[in-house]
Image 1 (cartoon, rainbow, N blue to C red):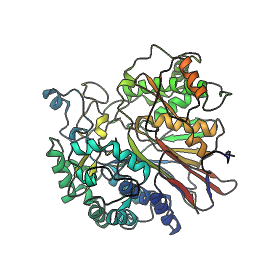
Image 2 (tube, one colour):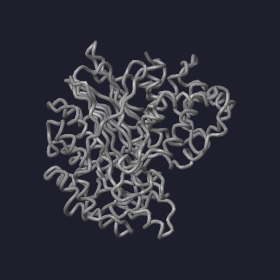
Image 3 (cartoon, rainbow, N blue to C red):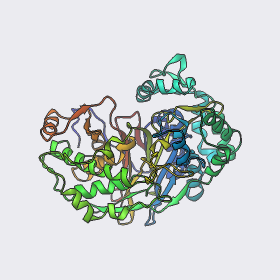
Image 4 (cartoon, rainbow, N blue to C red):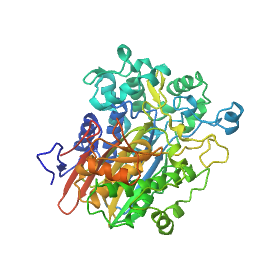
Length: 532
């Protein structure tokens, strides 16, 4: 039980249904769907559509979506890959001929075809009970009437003003700047676009005037995209075979590559061969081990992770106990590794913005869904008529001939967004996820070990201070105890205090023995968990 003398909040508890999202409006939309008889997947789609309006710096219909869904009473987890592809003309030779050696995060060449809307429709057709016509109503209302900007959204928005100006998205800078907390903002054009999707389905997004508007915005800036590329995106979302590992008596599930969920398995595998640290989850030794494991794992990610349709990704070898044991032996409890090649760190852009949500319904169906523009406001390119802000997921490609993640036509880039699911004896016990771009595998494993190894409650496990090794330094949050920072410095780390917190997350624990749902939403965001 948490110390009620200290700041914090309790885990949300309920019997019938639970939703945990990064914005109150989205959580309420999900609960409305659940109370009206919809299932967890229906509620998740309604919630994420609201997030695409009210948390526009993090997500939007111009982004991508991944989902893990655990149907009640069935010993399986369903995985959907809703990540978009590069335009057909994106050939490495085209970039080489123009002397381009890397992509820019606000360039049209960083924009892949958005996959989210196709993903929503595909999920609902297979496992939903309601249609987009009904589930988009709350999002449409927020887009038409405007939404109140919450503090964390405003904080992020202010940082991104220059990106929006550079790409002509002044419509998102009312009165010349980002909205203040408590100010109402009405996204231009988005309500009509959402109404078209509600009426005509995903086809309205990928074909016709809305697609033409997105293509025009990209080609005006030199993009290679065509309306045929967008039309192909209508059927781009696909069900894939999830990957899983056994850990501490549970099964942990992830989407396969091109997603980076296998890094979660690698981190858990390395750390599970070490005893728990008696000084607890925020001690210097525990964080040192986690950071050192992450340095090794992210190094491998940048060398191997890519679209499996275009490159062989050695998932089994990278997650094998023999390989992870070799990595484990490189970690010294007393000092950092000096000889780890820096490529896996230096190639990582700054942390990205994403939304993640969990929903569980009265029947025990569990949805773990994540939707993202990648970096804040994606590329910053706004399709003016349709109000669609376009992602910059293609920034994950390399312009390096022969690299597994080299850009190519209709190829998916290395992806960072990873929903998680935990099951036990064939039943879902926890949909969970941690946002934050490249931080996500690190964040997921910090959360899982906080909760299932060190015994923190669900909310405490999300709220605990975080660290992340990147660029030769160790990013730390302000909540880390001074003794832990000193212990990290003694081991050779170079801690740097960051302004933006590391990620955000949600989780719902299904206590089947007592018939209770416990939900938590990260204090780093504006959202909450709520049930009925």
